[in-house]
Image (cartoon, rainbow, N blue to C red):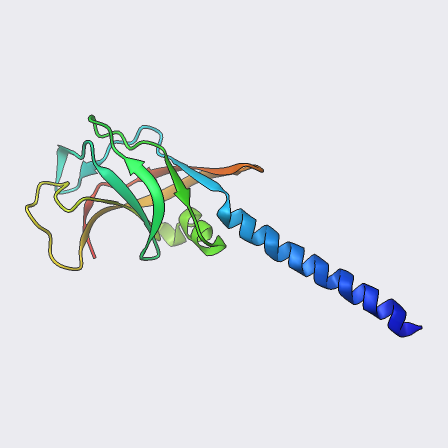
Length: 152
């Protein structure tokens, strides 16, 4: 008799665990939109230099994330849709770990006017999340960026 009760309870428990795992994955696979609130892409070495008409990539924890990012002809960083592959990427994007960002926008190597940059470096700006709004369809993150500079 006890076996008849334990088996359904165990199956129910396993179904709950499986459902929780699926929900966690769906959080990471939802559309994530980064909104930079009209921020202008500027170079730290020359703040009057604007990075215009440039493609941007999002890098989180040293991994390039599939995303659509650009600046306009006036250097405004457009909102971008990001395809995250894990909950950890979302957590890294939204945490600022004592002011140290784990997410960066990367511009082309020539974006700040240098003919080349040293090997192992990139022209990038730290991304700092301000707020995060999540609903059933998407997650929207309002963020600011530092000035672009060569970083390793």
